[in-house]
Length: 259
Image 1 (cartoon, rainbow, N blue to C red):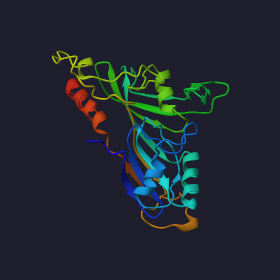
Image 2: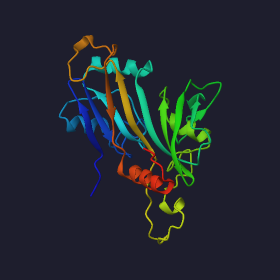
Image 3: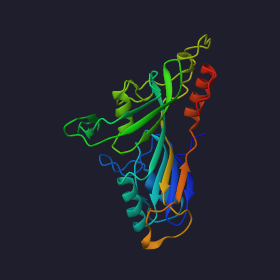
Image 4: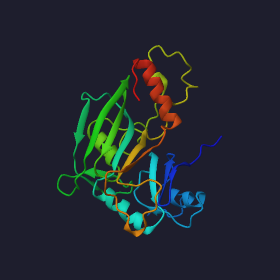
């Protein structure tokens, strides 16, 4: 059975929020505008002529994506992201075991313009980029982290993790791209290596949670909408089955609750 490309998480008069699968782009690709993309499919799904893209996550990353339904909401949300008011939380499966429980990475980043469209660390030309990482648990030579980016640079979490020596599993751009198999971290595994299927074979990064401060849920705000005030909207996308399977096996092996 083919997995759905996306599911609807939240909808009101002003926004539509989706949980997307790994492998689908959020908006048009500047190098290949013909590829399948979430903004168009999502608009068709909720039967609206157009959705406004507020922010983006990588094609290979799964998780939460917010779209605005009108121009004034698009401007308000875009401003909130730009001013770093929106709180973001990702879950990452990485190679290695960090020695610190928490670390803040603030290496400046800039696109390098190569054919692979990579982002690089550049202390002179790079823009300010800040990510806080917290270790949730480890098993074998793998760990599960939560990543909270304060800024929103392209590939920010992936590049920062690579700089710390803990590339995201399945990342063939900044890491080795290898899938994760149970035999790699479970002692005494006795299965057939030729028949073993990976627990996860794509980029192990999921946009798990978003908090929109000041967003009044389910109430039309019209052109005066502003994301200011004491209220807020909390959104969460369930962990995908492949990442969930990996985490559960890591919990069994380590004997600790990870997530």
